[in-house]
Length: 434
Image (cartoon, rainbow, N blue to C red; front, side):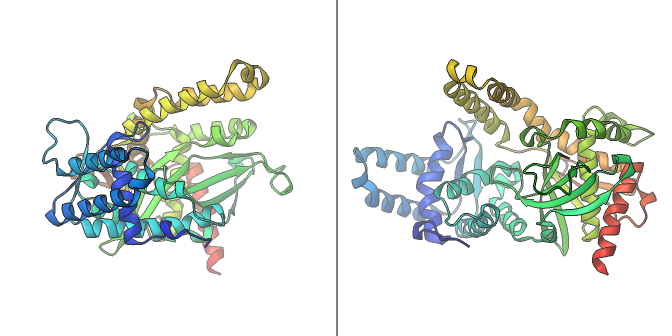
């Protein structure tokens, strides 16, 4: 690892002294973050928070031109946790039952995030903004049940960061080629996601143009990336469970090769052919996402993982994307003066397209990240008919839970291309075991 300033080290003291006066204040009033408040059930927790706020006031009062501003900020935090009910506010409330466990698990999550930050970036030093991202953005992944039991949410989040099931694929790995995909090279890679993403890791399947794959001197070899699977794996009752946070198309950001996209398009459409269960999901599910998720499931099976879950509701997601969309538009309007628009017309048009994808799109984005995600996972049952759903969002909690028994033969899968993809993954693991 690189260097970490003393004030940024993952100690219980550092975490509480940053989170209570600053992060909790931002959650209450920040114009870019979704707003919510904390409710601590233990009287001892209230006293602990008072102590932290008082120490903060004494330590930094000389740094403020107007010390009353500091006291006012701390009082806002204190008043919010002293509030007994939420009847007069639409602001969500996170209920902390055991404050020591809560902050200790947040500390552990922060510690693991630091390790992964250095692994992801190769930076020589840990940054203040990454600490803020860690404390502020993890809650975007929380369901209503997580708001009622944040300690368990943090416990699972720590376990998912520690999991190394697919670490053998941290370096991009070639898995083969298919006639159906014109013999273009197919690779997979296990990558680290960002704090603002829906899970801590992402599984990427990339198809390279066969004419350029071996030309490693090219900075950007022509390729097409299937939607990435954002995921986390944790263990419960002796079984590993894969939590799928999102399935996201990244080709806009990566400038995916158009020729490859067109050649793959007809193959993707084949997934909707034939008699399938859940016919009504055809209009809701993007075939490329089904293809990517099926390949990922094959890898899960090879690691002995058959339990899958996906969230049907995220408490803060809608407000986050509403504010984010407005922020993206404001920055675009401010940056792209008429002179810059004329000087860099192509870049400007790409920026406008990005704004169009985000500004006032919170309804669509929220649907994609919850309802359509659930539809896509449920659609797996059309192709893995031996699978079964244990619970739908709203039955027990906000999660879809299902089991997909391990495939013993490719004929257990519906769909020619999915069968062929299974064979590639199967051969990969057979060769690894030799």
